[in-house]
Image 1 (cartoon, rainbow over the protein chains, first blue to last red):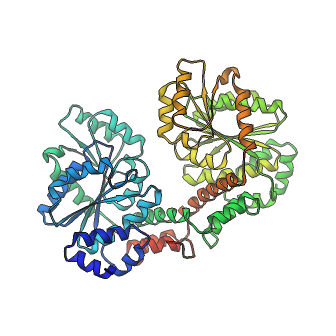
Image 2 (cartoon, rainbow over the protein chains, first blue to last red):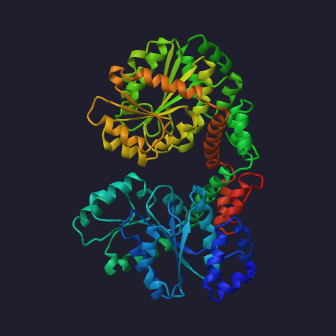
Image 3 (cartoon, one colour):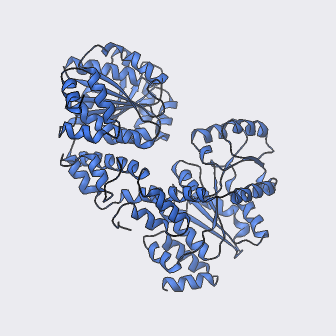
Length: 291
Length: 291
C-alpha cells in the first residue's frame, strides 16, 4: 500500500493501517507521511507522568473513559524510554487499559524511544500529526517518571500532569528530579491513604501549580481533574503555544546535532589542533551565530 | 589594558591580569582573547567529581601538592553550576586549598556556570586555552556531583575521577546518577572506614574503570592515584581525543542552539501553523541535514 492508501484505510477504521502509519511516523520516512497528510490542526495533548506505581495508567484509563462518555476520540501514546515494546511495564499498562481495547474510538500505542535521546523528540510530533489527521482530537501522552523524557513531554503536552502518592517519598523525589518544575497540574493519587493532606500541604511549598486529590481506582476526583484540564486548555495563549513550539524545535534540533554529517570531520580537526572548538560548533550551523 | 597587555602582565606573574583574562574567557569577548592567544597545546585536564562531602577538595589539595613537588604548574577550576562565587561550598573548598594560596605555581579559580546549561560548556574550553598560554600544563577541574555538569566535564577531562565514600549509599547514588558511566578512575576515599573493601567489590560490579582506595586527609594512596592518572594519559589516542572533541563541540553547539537568532521567529511560525516543527529544526542549521 502507498502512504495515501494507508491514510485512506486508517480513516476507514483499519487499526492495522493506523499502526503502519504511526510506525512510519516514528521512522526516517516520517517526512513522506507528513507531506501526504498535509496541514492539520494539532490535537489537544495531555501529558501524564510520575514515578512508577503512582497510578498513572489507572488514571489514564479512567480519564479515557470519561472523555469517551463525551464522545471524544482519544489516543494514548505510552512512552517508555528504557524498554522496547515488550517491556514489563508496558504490558502491565496495557492490561490496565483492557477496558478500552475493543473501543474503536480509543487508540493505544506504545512509542519506543529506541534507546537514544532524540528518538522521542523526533517521533512524538509526527505521531501527533498522524493522530490528528485520523480525528483523534485528544491525545494522552504517558511517560514513566525518569529524567529527560519528562522535559520533552512537557514541551509537547499541555497540561502536563504529575501524579504522586501520599507520603514524603514521592513528593521529595519529584521535587529533586525537577518533575514539579514541568507540572501544570499535580495529582495526589490514592488520596484515601494516610498523609494525603500533609502531602498536599508539602507540595504547595514546592509548586504553584494546582494540586488535586484523586482516588483513580474508584474514579473519585476525576471530575475535578477534567475541569482542571479544561481550565488549562481555556487559558492557552499564543505565548504558551510559541513556548511549546520553541521547546519542540530545540528538542528536535538537539537530536539533529548528534547526527550532523559534519560532526566527525570537525571533531577530528579540533582533536588535531586544526580548528578550535568554538569555530567548529559554529560551523555546524552553516551560518555565523551570535557570540 | 588591552588584551595583549593583559596577557603580557599575566605571563609576568600578575594574578590580577590572569583573573581578568579568565573573566574575559568566560564572557562573550572570549573570541578576542582566543585570537590574541593564538594556537597553544592544550593542557592535561584531570576531572574530579563526586557527591558533596566525599572529599573532592581534600583530594584535589593533596594532588596539587604532589604535582607541585614535581614542579608542575597546576590550575584548579572549581565549577559549581548552582552557586555564584560566594557560595558556601566554594568557600569551604577555598579554605581547604589554603595551603596553596601563596604558591605562584598554583592558580585557583571558581567558574560560575551563570545558571544556564551552556555556561560551563562555553566557559571551560576558553579558560583551558588561557591557562595553557600561561604555562599551566595541568588543570584540575572540580565539580559538585550533580547531573549534567559531570557529563560536560567528562567531555573535557581525561581522566575523569569519581570520588566516593565507603558504604552502599554513595555507590548506589553514583550508579543511579550515571556518574559511574563517565568515570575513568573511581576512588573510594576515607578508605579507613568500615565497609571500604565491600564498596570496592560492589563498584567492580558497576564499572570496568580502575578502583582505588584513598585516605586523602592522610595522603595515603595518592602515589597510586598519580600513577593511575599517568597511565591514563599514556594510553591516550587519536580516537579518544576525537571523542572528547566531539563531545565538546556538541556541548557548545547545544548552547548556541538555545540562543539561535532564528529560534523565536521559527517558534512563532510553528505555533501559528505556518511551518512544521521538523522543517523548523532543520532551518536552524542553514543547510538540509540527514533525516
